[in-house]
Length: 416
Image 1 (cartoon, helix red, strand yellow):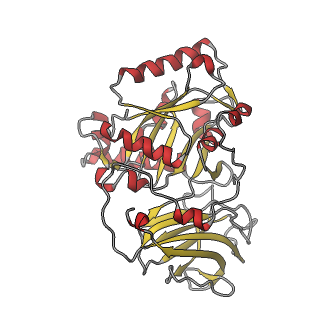
Image 2 (tube, one colour):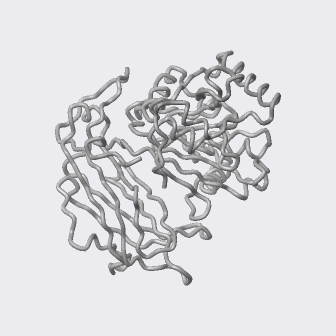
Image 3 (tube, one colour):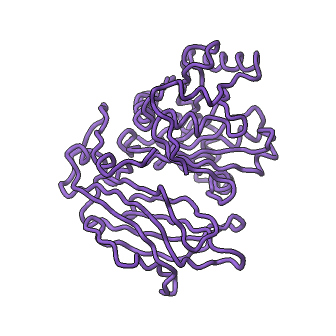
């Protein structure tokens, strides 16, 4: 599937929602930034070339981290597009380039460049000079920027709203996988999915504070000296589980519900959908989740404070599971996502479950979503039915070949 055109990226409609809309200033612009390539990138290791990637930011308000291009001095990013809405006329772009090093705690810094006139951009001949710490040139970087004044609809979004594309990344932790024996291949996977217009559906003033009534949360977030150690441990574990790596990472674009089922919820070893429960958080940037296991280690590794990197606030949190939409006797039929607010750490407001459903359906058109408050008996009933069906037949799965028949929506092949 081809990437969205400039008109698709900048003129899509804002979904109907019950959220309060605030007026915005008239100096508002939408941009599509396409990061294309670099050349003459120096190597920072003795053997081979660099593994370049970059982190871009606009005015310290929004950031984008690219995919890693392995072992090259001339990286090319074929699908590194970034749509941002409602930015001011004087917005500036800053790009830092790094060399990914899986064996070191910190990646090597290569250099940076700036675009000081983002709205009226003109690409320089030969690209942007990547300047190192000493001021010497460390290669050239090429990109394109298209902009237009924000429509009245776009101005209703918060400033610096990320609007696509929606991408996923999966990180496979071999160390956790070996300890937990989570799969036959001893791999434990964590997922991160960038979510379009997240601040529109979950404004900053609706963020969920950690639950002061929850004993385990107090042990992590309270200001006493004893909380420093668990918070530090959480951040180290979060980096190990979610850090981008060269060899144990996969990423791609998600255009609709079919992509979500095929590239995220289909087991990469069995090539089938398997019923299970996931723990998730939605933070300021993305939807993060991992599978909940019956083993102690995997259950701890997927807890909310760890997924949130020890943050005191999240947009939302809970658990979700997958089930056949028309009952477990029809597992070859359409599936749906059942999601709740079951987090003791953050205790999210159940009134925002509607916002959660709207966010998911907006990002993944065609997705069937059912929401339950964690106290709803129907939630326990749904999980019990999944457990019973799984125990009755250990091989309950859906072949990936059947997914194309679930919906008239086409399956995207444009995966990095």
